[in-house]
Image (tube, rainbow, N blue to C red; front, side):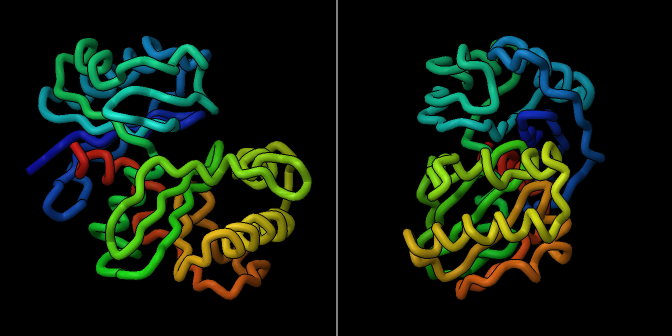
Length: 242
């Protein structure tokens, strides 16, 4: 079976057609800059551009950077506040003339790892983090997803939200070397370790591709590994959930 997976991020909206039986990309990834402001209708039009690019009319899954409950957007951090309360399933389906289902982006990426990647068959408590414009999270216990965690919004000792202190966007903005950034990220992991006592951390998102550049700065006791699907997990997971 095939589905179009779309990963909506703060800086880019990316999509590809996925074989949902194997998790493999059938097409190359197509990326469009996230519209600014990222209003619901502007995002819907960008999703429509991606469906037209692939000449697609089937099922579409979208990973979205917000709490999603039954397709309704409940929060807005790296998108326009006008998205809150919008039935994204309905809006995106109407604009694209496709059957679109929307999920929290980190949940989608984590689900791909649950099926094909690092947490496949893992029966402990696993915490998945996407490191990009913000920080998304997905929590798994005994192989089951606990949806809509927002651990990137936890406040740290310095009074900052985690994603305002140690996201990949912050690393770029402050021109931090990977090891400098790694020290910051380690403080965040220490806090999560203290709060939740996970048995495994999985790191996804753009920064996961550079794991070897900052892994030496991570000193927590919990095992850590980069997501096997790396930055493509969001697209794959969205397609699987669709």
